[in-house]
Length: 53
Length: 475
Image (tube, rainbow over all chains, first blue to last red):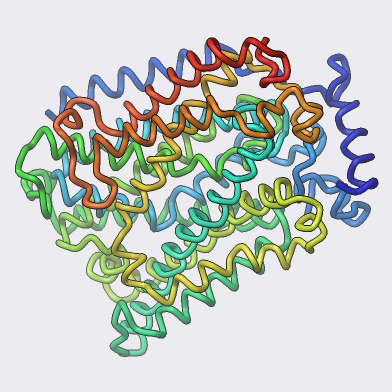
């Protein structure tokens, strides 16, 4: 990695590593979203197996 | 070309074209932007090919169930890893894998994925584009071009050239193209579905037997489910670098349900129905019999060209990966030249159209052997072992200085777990002959491979790597 690239990386890391800054990492996906996706898939699977088999 | 004032940025500063972590203001895709890119990626003719392949094992009813269940499982897993780590941190997909495999392990993986899988899939799509355009010529110009003719390869090369022209302009052009192509693909798919039912009724379709089943109903259904699980896992090498461009973790997660799941499922179901109704698994042969000369040719031309959007999306992902993992020499290569180099292997493969095109199910299976265990290892690593926290600085340090250094840049536990998963897959489903072993009928092959790799990585890390801080930073 050349000096220009390294400097740009450092600038970005400082912005992202500041937890209170506007460029901080995004928050995790809410657990409710994951549970909703899992529940939807489970219901769909059971209904389709009942219908097709 | 990039999110913020492209003219002001050098290629080194434009992080949408290299492996630097993206800032929030550089994320260019919201929910619907990423959904439309996803739809454009999903409804290429590979979704129709998937449907045609499923028609070999099961009839219409079981095909619907196997497609929804198979894609549902694997798309959900792929949406969790790599989409969420990449979306949350704006980090390039194979850079994020340094926390799992080590710097050298991630680089080796990137080369294999980008060079081999991207080339193979680009070739399949380009050949299909060639087939479609050749069929258009046969209808409009009254030519008699066969599927293996040299002109098909030339048309496929032209399709790769068009893909290069788009991808060379960066991710903004992908978004722009998909804004027009994605809705058009949805319309073509739904019109095809309607046209299938002008030729046949649901009861006739449901009674139509599969093309070449094993004769054991339960085993055939599980083979169809496996084919669709593997089809969903095939998105793994591409989606992380696309999710990285989204503005929220929800936007990195849910559009996969619209694009990779719903659009793929609808297109694959249309593919099965058309294959069963017309007695052919080749999607480029369906359009004219279904739609008549004018509508069929228009649909065929559109779907043929739409393959280009899929080549573009996956080439962009591979390019970002290679820029990131290829070292300083590769980083100096201009984006457009690198785009040409990454499409070059596909341009060779398209001169063997029948060998590539006729091995679709095997390509899917070969991908799943590696990708199902990889997805498991990444998922366990990010969500269970690291509780969704990555050290972004350590990801970008050389392995000798990084907490993600492991043993000389390799994580032997993760590599061993992936190998165990791949072995599990191969023992359950022969990847060459596609012949299943006894337990396959209860387990499939991808899911046990996923489970074995995930458990092996979790237990191995707990027992071995947690002893020292510099062995991956788990302690």
